[in-house]
Image 1: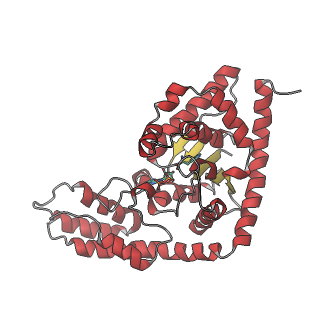
Image 2 (image 1 turned 135 degrees about the vertical axis):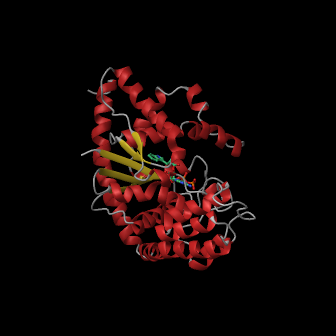
Image 3 (image 1 turned 30 degrees about the vertical axis):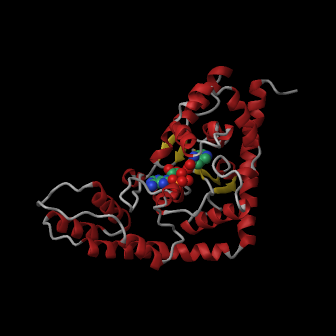
Length: 328
Ligand code: ADP
Ligand code: TRP
């Protein structure tokens, strides 16, 4: 069976972008692949050096993973920092990662601009740690959103380079993966192209109905269509993308027709959209609460996941040590 790996940093609650860009694929993939889904707590230190309560943040993501339908009986679910073997592979990969290529990474340049007082080595080597996360289990598929493409290219490059340097086909090259092409990028409701925690334009899975309605009703729109069947400007297209993701096809078609014949009322569209998001979120939100109240269960699931992940990681790292020459 093919192996799949993915992770999300515990820097806040999961939002609809995380769900439709990544977690929805996790839930589907666990039925067909040998899956490892983790919480990237080490990675979060690259931007949050002094996290408030890192254990609790990891528990939150774990509760959200489970509430979305990840099943510890099907997938190995663990916390990155519980599998120290990853660090050794990170070190080996760093020895063959070059300063120039790491500095040229867009996400590094972006982060360096956003936090000029903290351009740390972890930020620079973010892609090697991510590659280690993936290839430690010899994964071939990685469900992530479009924004991770460059990190994925680096992961492939590091896997290939390892094979070339040591002269064997050891690590497979991991490919990005998504079930539904159209849901790869969830837009923001503030008129921006992408929903993201750092952009402050998120609807969280844990968000309550009142707050969701408020956010959706405030979504940016324009003065309305002026000609029949005209192309939608980005802010309006974003609302339709949302309808496409969370509403029924009938709802989508209804408002699309209204757009096309210029009778659309954005207020009606937003009201419907808000209700559809609430309907989508509510059961997930309830389950998140249940899991959050059961710390014992969460910790047990994390412990069992770590054990399984360590088993797979240990096997790989022992082989890697031998390949490089660290064996007696
Ligand atoms: P954020 O942008 O909120 O910080 P992360 O960078 O932690 O989110 O992303 C975690 C996962 O969710 C990644 O696989 C990423 O590609 C995906 N993701 C995040 N935002 C979106 C979005 N708006 N659309 C699609 N996928 C997304
Ligand atoms: N870089 C990913 C993000 O920001 C998180 C991540 C870390 C990851 N390691 C990974 C994703 C390995 C997939 C596989 O969302």
